[in-house]
Length: 285
Image 1 (tube, rainbow, N blue to C red):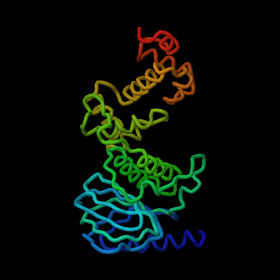
Image 2: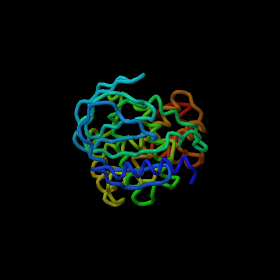
Image 3: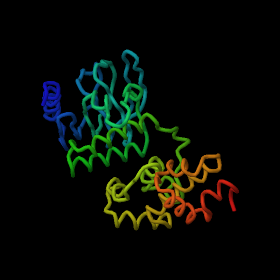
Image 4: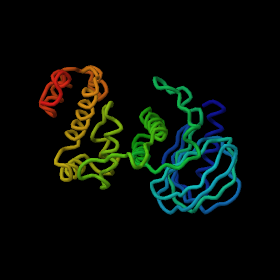
């Protein structure tokens, strides 16, 4: 452990020992905690780590003023916010219980095969996004079962932060079928955000706090399809829209996570009744 990591760990430990704090998991570069925050008004204490928080209970109006910072918003269950180090500000926050991830601000400065992640555009804003809230909860389950040092946790946190930088307007969020506004809506939102990626249904189930069998039964009861069949349907709908706009078959296949053209063609034909090449040439049958 280098001196920088050791200093962070020391600060994490002091954070963990604060009143009203329960440690869920910890590594050299991150700590996951559940905190009971008391109402506060004054100047925030500088910290050497970034802090991502999800409100679980309580909340209320909040404001914050500082260099380049101007917040007037409301914390409520499901709201997320990110604070960065070296950004002293004056403000007020309500009493609330929150799930927090504190991490080194340099954690994603060079994130492997992905581009470095600039956190500044999403800092000092509040987000009300069901998918992001679900992802935060899923990270908690991952940390409890596998710890925070696993590449899976770091990748999941990267995707969550990336999501916050792409949160659509609430009016533009589209939920499908009988799940519109329902209890499984976060699962649909996660599917929509991962059309180009492999998304194990067991992962979705864990994120919803269910075992795979219970999740599949609940999902089919509300949509008439299994989660996998529904995810495939969403993928093919998106592929069809791309073909109609002039995309090539290979391009459409890659956009919905298929590297094997034959498997894509078979899935497309089952859903749309035609091969993708025929659809591109002639449109709907």
